[in-house]
Image (cartoon, rainbow, N blue to C red; front, side, top):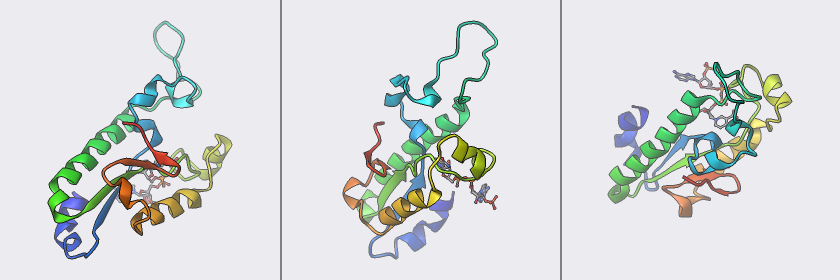
Length: 142
Ligand SMILES: NC(=O)c1ccc[n+]([C@@H]2O[C@H](COP(=O)([O-])OP(=O)(O)OC[C@H]3O[C@@H](n4cnc5c(N)ncnc54)[C@H](OP(=O)(O)O)[C@@H]3O)[C@@H](O)[C@H]2O)c1
């Protein structure tokens, strides 16, 4: 809704970009990777007790959907010269998991690291990767 609302302003820019904030948990390919905490497989039986990390199915599914939203905006605005990205800022100590302290205790990084990354994308340093899901150190698999 926000992108839709601001497209007329965006198109006045000589170098327009749109950035959606996705998550490292959104990749379908890496759901095969059992070394990642959020891919924890609970023991058999029902009900399932939450693992070391709950797995947040709704959160990560919404971010997978967001990656498609990014692809759709890429398609819609291609001929307008707009560069569209998804960015994963990395596991960061914010209020997302309750408090920065809780997140830090789980290994989250200083949010400034993700912030600088987003700023770099905003300033064009990753323009060659437009239309993709970006991580600080590369491209996230779909
Ligand atoms: N933290 C991580 O490890 C991590 C990793 C990957 C991706 N992300 C993504 O990064 C983004 C920012 O999350 P965060 O970690 O910084 O979480 P956060 O500390 O909880 O911050 C969320 C921010 O969103 C604002 N917000 C929430 N609902 C809103 C609404 N309806 N309208 C306008 N603003 C709203 C909040 O504003 P108020 O403070 O005013 O409530 C707050 O500033 C999210 O998209 C998250 O999924 C986070």
